[in-house]
Image (cartoon, rainbow, N blue to C red; front, side, top):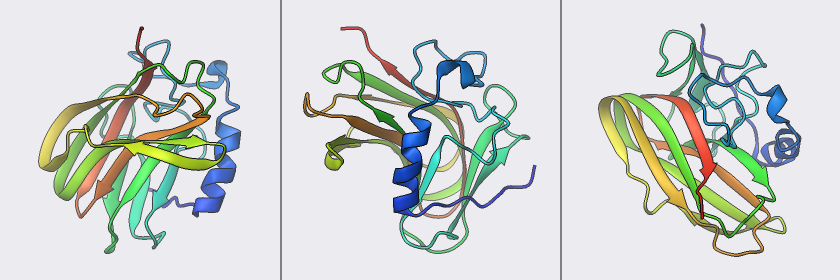
Length: 194
C-alpha cells in the first residue's frame, strides 16, 4: 500500500480529538491480541477508515517533513502497521490519541507499543501529556525507554500516573526524532488494577 501523507495543524488536531473521544468500542476494528480494556481505538491500524483515524499526527513545524501511512506489508500482529518516515529536517513528530475524562484519574495506566526501526537516527520514545480544563499540566516521558538504529519488533512499556485528580484529558502515543523509518503496531493503553 502506498504511504499517504497525513498532517494536521495543532488546532485541527485538537478539534478532531473531540470526535475521536466519542467513538464507541463497537466501532473499533481490533487486532486479535488486543486486551478488552485497551483504551486505544484502531490500536493495530486494522481499520478501513480513511488514513489512520482516530490517530492524530503532530509535526513540529513543517507538515510535510514526515510521512505517515498504513503499511500492509509489515505488521507485528494483524495485517497492518503504521509506517513513519522523515523526509525533511524537523526535530520531531508524534502520533497520538486523545482521551477525555478517564474513569479514575488517580489510577495508573500502562502505555505499550510494538515498534520496528530501520536506520533510526535520533530516538523513538513513548509519551503522555495530561490536561486540565484544556491546558496542559504535565507530561511523562522520562521513564520511557528510547530506541534508535535498526531493530526488530520491540515492545516499549511505560507506566503513567496522572499528576492531578483534576486531569480531564490524556494524550498518549509515540514520538520520533531524526531520520529513518519506524513501524508502530499493537498499541495498548490500559488501566492497571489498584
